[in-house]
Each structure stands twice: as C-alpha cells, then as structure tokens.
Length: 285
Length: 284
Image (cartoon, rainbow over all chains, first blue to last red; front, side, top):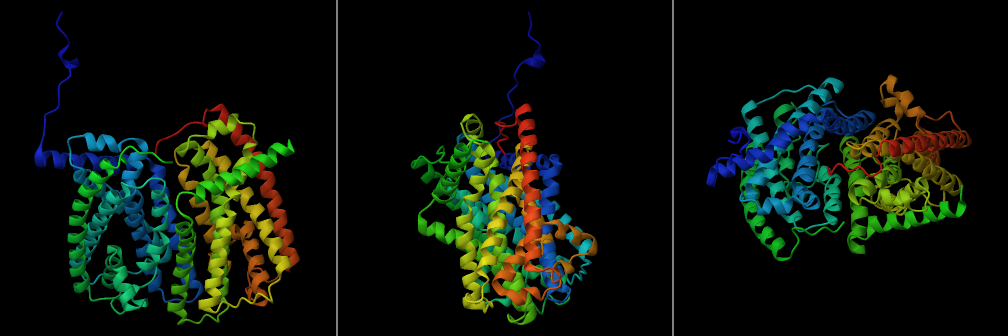
C-alpha cells in the first residue's frame, strides 16, 4: 500500500550563513510583533500603565503652576518609558526568563547565532513598543491638549532611530550580562526603573542637572534621545536643551556603535563563561 | 476560626516573605536596593518642583508632595505585596497548591506575606524623610510631631492596605493570564486619585469623587497632619475635617474594606477551586 504523500515529513529547506541569520531574526521578532498583538489586554495595560504615571506628573506640574510645555515634556517622556520598560524586562531580563523556562539551553543548542536571537528580540520589541508609544502620545496629546511644533522632521526621525538603535544595543549588551544572573535578575531590573527615569530626565529637562551629571546620564541613550526630540518638537525645547541637537546626534551615533559592538563581544564572552560555570540550565528561584 | 492556626500562618508567612524579599543578596546590597528606588522616585518630584519654583522648598506644596510620596511607599509594598504572594507562589515557586493542602489559613498566609514587606517599606520611608529633612529643609520637627496620631494612623493604615491587598489577591486568584499587572495598575491608579502628590482639587471635577471614596486619601492626610500639623491643614481638600473625623472616616472605610475582603476572598477562593485555577501556571 502506498503511503499518503501529504503525510510524509518533508524537511524544510536547509539554510545557513546570512540567510539563517536573517531567518532567525525574523523568527524571534515574530512573537513580539504579531504574537503580542493577539493579547488585547496586554496592549491596553501597556498603554494604560504609563498613562497613569504621565497623568500623575502632569497634575503635579499643574499643581505647582508649571508652564504648559512641561506637560508636553511629560507626555513625550511617558511614551519613552514604554521603550525603557521593554528594554529592561523584555531584552535585558529575557535570557534570564528563558533560563527559567528552560528555553535558553535550546537556543544555545540550535545551529543559529545568539546575536541573531537578540537582534530579533530587539527588532520585535522595538516595533511592538513603538505602537504603544504612539498610542501614549496620541492619548496624552488629546487628554492634556499638548501642542507640538516640529522644527525638523528629518532630524527628529534620525534622532529617534539612533536613540532606539543605541538603546536596544544597550539592551542586547545587558542581556548577555543577565545570562549569569538568577534570582537577583528580577531585583536588578526592578531597581533600574525609577533611578533611570530620574537620571535620564523622563519627566523634566536634563539641563536642570549639573553638566557632568547630565553628561554621565547621557550614557543611557534615551537621555540624549529624549533631550534632542524635545528640542525638535517644542518651541521652548531648544532653550531647555542640554546640548546642541547636532552634537547629540553625533554622540548617539557613537553610542550605537559602542553598544552594538559591545553586545557582540560581551555575548560571546558571557555565553562561554555561562557554559563553563554551568549557569545555562541553573535554576535558583 | 482556629486562633493558633491563624496566628501561626500569619507569623510563618511573614518570616517566609521576609526571606524571599531579602535573602537574594548580601545585606549591604539589599540595604542599597531598598533605599535607592524610593529615593529616586521622590527625587523625580523634587527636581520637578525645584525647576518650576526655583527651589522654593518653603512652599507648603513641597511637604505635601514629599510626605505623600514618602508614605505612598507603604501602599506599593503592603497592598501589592499581598497580591504578589499569589503570583509568586502559583507561577514562580509553584507552591500555592502545597499551601492549600497544608494546615494553614490561606488568607492569613497571604496577609503575612504582604505585611512582611512593612519593614522594608519602613526603612525606605525613614530614609526618604531623613533625606528630606537633611537636604531639602522639609519642615519636620520631631518635637512637634503628634506621635499618638501618627502611630494610630499608621497602624490603621497598614491594616487598611493589607485588606485592600487581600481584595487584590482574591481577584488575582481568579485571573491566570494577566495577573501581573493588577497590583501595579491599582497602585498606579490610587497614586493618581488619592491626592498622594497633588491636592484633589487639581483633578477634573468628575474624577474627584474617586479620590474621596479611597481610604488612602484620608490616611495620607492624617500622616501629613501628624507630622507637620498646621502646614498640612492649610490645604483645602480635607480642611473642613478635624483629625478625629478623619480617623473616624479611615476606620469606617477600613472596616468596609475588611468586610469586603473577607467576602471577596471566600467567593474568589471558591470559584478558583471550582475552576482549577489554584495550580494553573501560564509560563509567561
């Protein structure tokens, strides 16, 4: 009797090299871009939660009689918190979660590049979070009547893309460091919320700090990204800006290079270290 | 109710909660961890305030914001802590089913897990207040503090937060997929509506009744009044109420939430058992 050919297992076409690299990126980004949109309540809460903080800070500014442009600063900063949260919980901590679930060993055993896995996570997270950030800005603009005056769309797009590339590069770098962590990973990620909101000026202009403090905070790409974006979309932004937008763009380019190259080297090193110390399958709850 | 079982459940859960919170690192790093987060949180508000008012810390708005934010640490720790116990035990440690078959009282076990975080919150609040006094001229004079009002308000407040936490824990028992956000969303909403960092008058008219219905609004007002007396009474929101009236309202609302939490827990617990949710994990 002849077997039904449609039931016979047909192996997928084998891909290697750059094609495998690209397919891995797409495969890892798919659950974030498509999968996460299926759970509607997640979308709601990921927009609603930053909106609560945005509203609270807007009302604080109104209570102390701040000029209305500060309300716009808070709305833009609140939208950017979505990216920071995504980098923190879905990039940096991701390999720790994967270890908890038992997937990390599978990632490492598979014949694909871990760098491609991280890039896929970053790409998927960036696209999915961008949708939420846009929703926060639209909602904040509508609720608090924020006025935007964009002075240069090309610079604005460049700043955003550079800030995101550097930020997710930073996330990829820290993901490899989290590879070694166990229980403490959750606490460390938890600790990196409010201090970063403070240092990066999510709710106020970073210029308010001493120059050297602001310069040190600029190592976090969102600091300069936010500052440059505020300068480009608010009339008074330039007066409250930390550095000239061109300088901030140059620094962001450097940060992109440093974080992406750093992520590549650190990942290789940490992966070897984790394998050598037996931490890939370690599960200390 | 078996008193010894109830007390034992609460006591052991408090000890367990403390171990879970604290033993993941060495004491020094843990001390830094519990101090940095609340200090950064209050520093955001301090910077915002100083930019707009040019550092006018003598304004009565400043202690209003500062103290409200400082004592709100208890809300985040205690209330959210009770509901987190369900998530941690069911999803992370996967021990909730064992707790159910052990000879303990589950509601008191959950309350103990939340209340264990009081010590962490207390340290964070003390450090925040000390920083305000030392560096920001917070008008806090320990000789002028109404200690009786302070401790009574704190005690009732912690019970109230634990009861609210039990309501959240009950809802968390029923929800499998999205339970992680319940505590944070509730704490975030209460931060907005309870007048923690701005007077309720700033809210749109239609949102103010929400603030007046929340016991945290009255609790925070009592904490402010006990510490800085006349400065706190200057704000119009609850100016027409005396301290005794505020304590009466807080006690009444606390009892209301306590009764609601008992019935809520019994109902949710019954449904969760019936639907097989006690040991269901999502692997999210």
